[in-house]
Amino acid sequence: MSPTMLLRQSRSVLCRVSASHAKSLSALALAGLKSYYSSSSSSSSSSSQSSTFEQATELQGSANANAYVAAVTDKYSIGGVPNGGYLAGICTRAAQATFGGAYANVVSVSGPFHAAVAEASPADVTTEVLHAGRSSASALVRVQQNDDLKCTFIVQMGDYSRMRGIAVHHLQPPQLAPLEHCINASEAIQKDFRGMFRVADEVEFRVPPASAFAVTTMAHKPDLEADCSIAGYMRFTDGGMPNLEFFCDAAPPPTLNAATTHWVPTLEYSVHMWADPQIEYAAKGPDERWVRFNFSSKYVHDGLVSTDGELWTDEEHPKLLARSRQLARHLLPKKN
Image 1 (cartoon, helix red, strand yellow):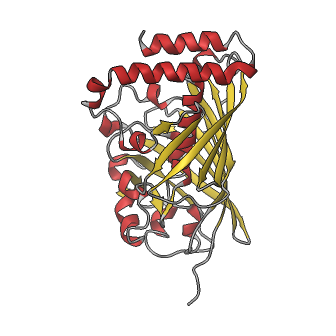
Image 2 (image 1 turned 30 degrees about the vertical axis):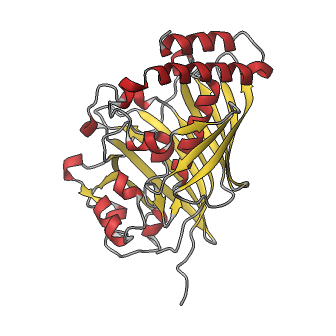
Image 3 (image 1 turned 180 degrees about the vertical axis):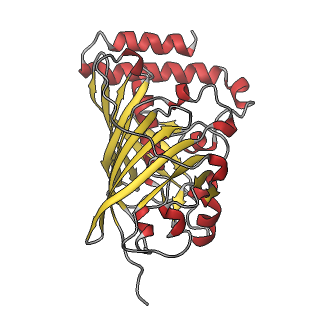
């Protein structure tokens, strides 16, 4: 049986049972998928289709169908700590594995961070099915290291192809200079952060030369009166498909425009997905998978920061991909 037929079968079964049976059915679907791919591993392993990010969020299943192990890499770290969006990406993959493909899309991911995750170290990822209905499902995902709880996320699943209803569009995509007129911010970030912002090795950022980020942070001229925003284009350097939960947390903090910082740790993070990159970018080649982004921190008080973000497709009529909000702390540099 092909994986597509297997997923359709698992969805059909899940839609006819109560939520209390979701775990066992999800385990069966996941086992079937593992069986299919293990039988064809010789052909899949020879191809290099998976992106660096996909490889970095891979999970190994344990005897318990809802418990996994993630090999947390240091490729997406900032100051020696794995990026929160990267951890969210691991959690969404755990939820997808738990539901066995019965729901086509991740609709949202939201949750708090409790403690820093150690980079280049395994993490235990467990899932708990909260709800499994006909058109949507949700799971609580926990990430632990050495039995210490590091972060928890609630992942909401659904299927865009089955959603119908009204449409009210008042949002406008960021107005940006053409891509070819923008400057490569990744190079400046790598230099200024002296290798600590490793995300910039994996993600290429382009920003307009007259943007707030370019004239303050990149020019080393932070200003408390400056617009705390960063907008531009981003893509994976290896040309991989955009990952929304990661991209919503990949850019440098907008508050850098106002003041230098020792650290901007995220306390709570939420992303709502409005489209599927696998569909929106299906016809685009690796060099064309640019995403327009816009992140702004309009209110900062006593070092507490609220940042709103948007991701859009890069085309003549941009389409909203995701919106995010995170609560963080802007920590001032340590005094000697």
